[in-house]
Length: 279
Image (cartoon, rainbow, N blue to C red):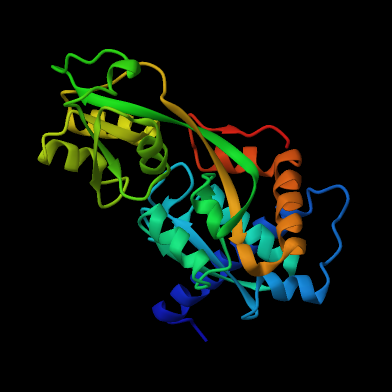
């Protein structure tokens, strides 16, 4: 029997899904200690619904983005979520959000089991973090005609700084800036467009996102260097217990030491991020 076009499409989707799963299981096998399957109570702490619900933030293109062809989320955080689910021996459900703040709420509310966040003390109220798995830079962007030439010049009275609402940059700058006024865009990817629309003086965010927007729009430049280093970590809801928190920390260290994180960054062609050192 000759497969119909619809059947061929279904088979392609099935094989693609199996390919992702196989890649994840292969990556997990890179751990030379062959970590045994966790105890049932630990699996239940991570995945009480029977599958691991992972909160994925598309607001940071270093961590995740949509595949241009399939529309599915992909990136180092997605790969790590699949790898953890494989270790736990459970299925996975990706809960995809366009902003970090929404991703945090999903975990703290129990709508998701794990997430991928910049480490920040405010978020730590409801989330327990692993050590960082990657480090990325936060930068400032201005118009070419701006008199600002240095990061230290930004924090002055009368200067307006646009950030993504609830992002790591928002949380950090809300604590650190004393003279400048913070304005907030709906999401981090919308920062530069909102910065232009509202005639702000400075846009703040992921260096790579700002570089891409500057190339896309023209007439913009980044200030030299960085104003912060963001440590991106995995997080689990605070009430899932100490055993789950310890397992997640150990998992991240194994993924860094095995080369999994470095290979994921290379596979997704991520520039400007580095694997965080061992904790």
